[in-house]
Image (tube, rainbow, N blue to C red; front, side):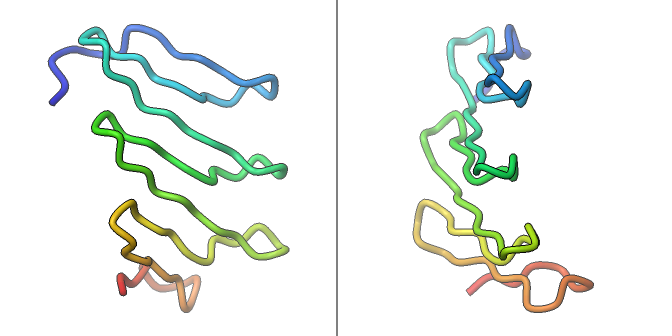
Length: 82
């Protein structure tokens, strides 16, 4: 549970946020692929979600830390959990 605001941000060489460190000492982390698409996120509880993209950098699927897969079957529709 967060008890304070963001104290500082950390960035990679491309200027993308890699970590948000909160005043209570917790952090959120972000990972990116070679095309600068967000490929992963670890929340303050240590749960990681990963994202996969097609060759045109369209988001295809998200995989939550519990194994739940989130698919985008049609880019005009919201993502569907499976």
